[in-house]
Amino acid sequence: MSLLLVSRQAHAETALLPYKPSTLCFPYHLSYSTGLWQGSIKLFLEERSVEQVKAIASIRTCSTNWGDGQYSMVKTGVYWAEQLGVSFTRKLLEGCDGSVQAT
Image (cartoon, rainbow, N blue to C red; front, side, top):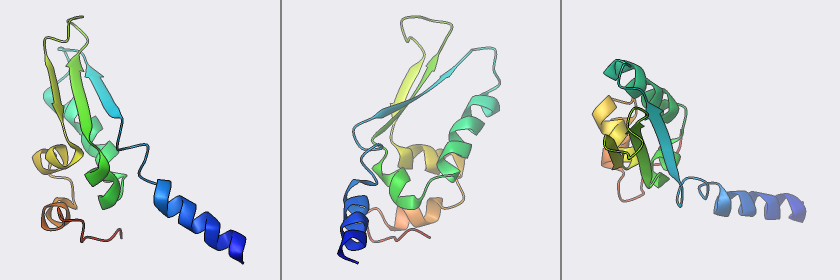
């Protein structure tokens, strides 16, 4: 039983680590419609818990047409969830103090 509790504690302490220090990159080609590349970000966020989205420090979008990243934007997971109307956006905005629990 103690091994199970240690495992749960380790999971609780590390579950968000992949999202915090990373920059998630969503490259797109300028010929894509805006809805296509934004839809990819929206789908990705909808498949995450509220806590995971809040932990995403940066999502970068960049055009693959320009090697210098001329068309690039870096925003948080919460920013993109709000902009794209992710279904749990209201919970995100209400719980920015960390009070919202995963469903």
